[in-house]
Amino acid sequence: MDKAGSRKPFTYGDYLSCPDEGRFEVLEGTLYAMTPAPSRMHQKILLALASKFYNYFEGKLCEVYCAPFDVRLAGEGEKDGDITTVVQPDIAVVCDRAKLDEKGCLGSPDLIIEISSPQTASYDYIKKLSLYEKHGVKEYWIVSQADMTLMIFKLQENKEYGKPEIYSRDDTVRPGLFSDLAIDMREVFRQ
Image 1 (cartoon, rainbow, N blue to C red):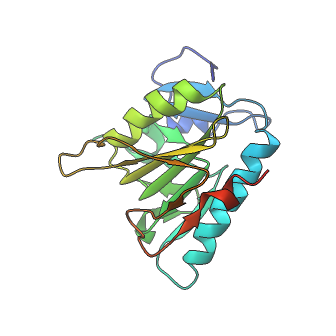
Image 2 (cartoon, one colour; image 1 turned 90 degrees about the vertical axis):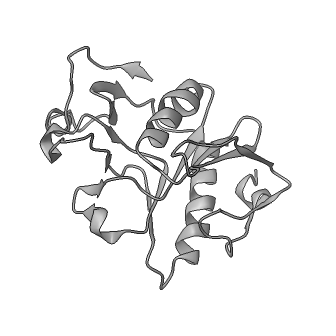
């Protein structure tokens, strides 16, 4: 991810004036340009996971959204136009429909999935991990397309992520929030 500007703090209001040709995120007042279109494997993983969640939530309260989908994470006292953190997770699961509006999601989704590549690894494993923990995302999944693994971070009672659960392509995963959903990772990492 490359910094697209040095003006601080960059706000959601500023974000709305970004050019339509690119995709951007704002992390704590800094604008970042998203990398070029994701790889074919990234898109296959995204579609496989999103369809599992979409089918599971049929007729249930929670909803699943895929990027590009704006998630506005407000800091204390920030009004909508002044929000300094706007992300576009690969997948977001939102169970509190009051957080949904025509612009996307205002507040923390219950579960966020990022599909990491070598170009986005530090962004996903460091910046976003810290950011999602700070904003109370209950489960944060990082899928590594390079080594076909999944790391699941779960928010603990102390409001911090515990040690991640790590899964390989041979495992079946049950999300902590939705334990009756079983995801066969062989189907997710199908070549």
